[in-house]
Image (cartoon, rainbow, N blue to C red; front, top):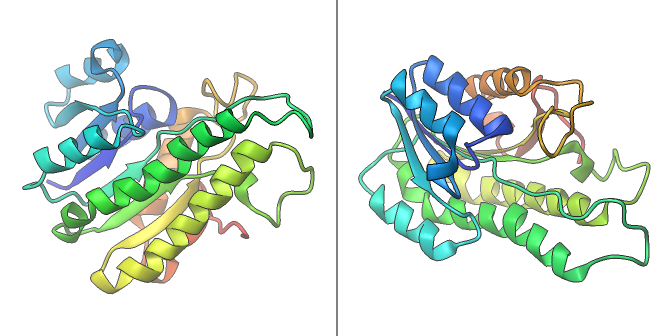
Length: 230
């Protein structure tokens, strides 16, 4: 049975991805900061014994190390770093919160890099060997025609760069990497007015990863499989 590790799996896109992979016969290693409070995620265990839930705050690198060591014997086919935060909204030029910026970079960028390092061996021992990070098209320099959003935009541009560099370093070992734009999704971050449901996004992302080939490694794709310009 193939295995996937999904961070931030207790709600939104992470929860929807967990459901899609379970329904497709995968063993899902789902993480969230507080498993005891993850009611919707835990409820899946009654139907899917292939679900395992682990505590993980992606900015707690000691905890991440402990989890990687606990799962050391496990070959993990796909690792998806879905956990992420937006940071403050509505600020203008000249009002930037530097401490908030550091926090967003730690969650969205530093955690992605550390996850890749700590689960490199697990991926190497698997069949599929895919490391994915949920990014956003707002991290595209080409598509940035409105300005603003400095904190979130820069964090997603940075994680895209991490994914590209990882591809250059890891493809020789058979590990493919990808940055994924899930769409504007109806989540706590995306809001109720977003046009894409978590289920639609997750189904699309599942399809992208299911058909992912070496030539795409290091790329940036949306949930429909379309390439996004840097």
